[in-house]
Amino acid sequence: MKKLLSTLLISSAVFGGAQAVMAQDIVGAGDADIAVNGTLGADNTDPGSTIPETDVDWINVTVPTDTIFYNKVSEPTIKAPTYDIINHSGRPVKVSVNNFADAAGTTNPTLPNDFALNLKVTGNNVTTTSTKLIEQGVLQASTNELITLANNVDQYTKNDTAVTAGTAVNNHATFTYAGSAKAVAPLKLGYTLSLKFDSIAF
Image (cartoon, one colour):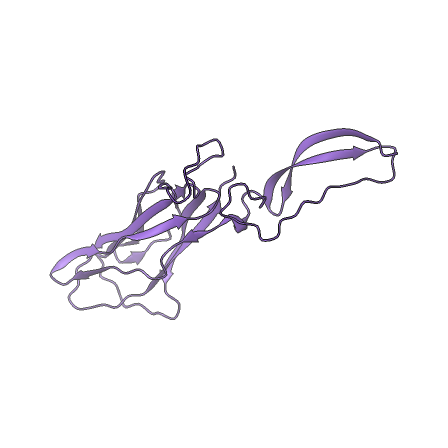
């Protein structure tokens, strides 16, 4: 007969995330039964999904593929459209700048020494509203957190009240570029802005 003498709640690393699991001590017995619960087609938009907390499989974010900025010879102020970042995940997601560098295969010309370019972020729960990408014509090694987006039903924690699907607002942020530079002739530039996403455990 199996002797299951104690059951306790422990925290262990499962697939890279902290996951609460029940453990059993087997004493005076030669066998044990372990429940196996699986999910085929796990849905990372479902807050109740059994994907391990903080696992990269929670990430489900929409960002633009291409963005632009520009100014004119007669107007040094840099202009840019406004772009969206949307979290479709069942978990909140932290968005950070991971890198800003010349685009692959691109050799950019010498930049004006007064060239300043900033990344401007707007939304709820913004950590950094303005990040320097270029200052005095030099690329900056910025790797800072930008914003934490709520999940797709506007929750930052599991205790927050979930809104009706499709009506969340805090899962959405916008960004644009701002700055200035004096240009005497057109300069074609190409960069890659790399973002990092981290799912936040409930």
